[in-house]
Image 1: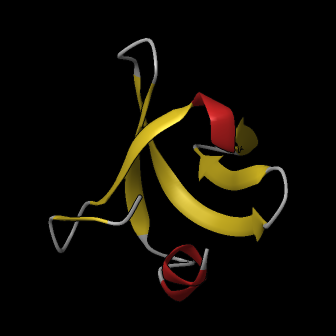
Image 2 (image 1 turned 120 degrees about the vertical axis):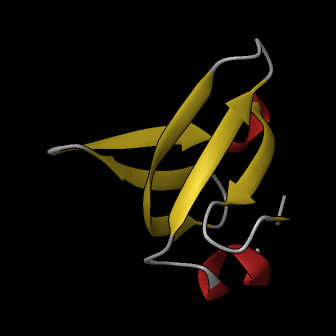
Image 3 (image 1 turned 90 degrees about the horizontal axis):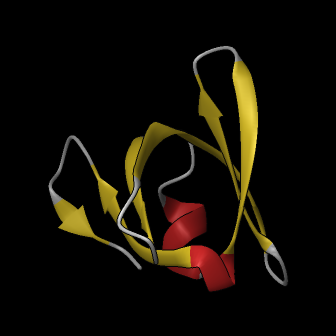
Length: 64
């Protein structure tokens, strides 16, 4: 959780449990439910149980 908050405002890539990839800016973290990402002009909510991995795009590190 602390690692996600530290990278708030950075470009991330989220891979879900079905293999789909979503790219956007990490805009918020709800510690009990999931993350909020800005993808284009909309904000997308992704629950924690649906996330397989989160990568920071510019740095190339895995944070979740």
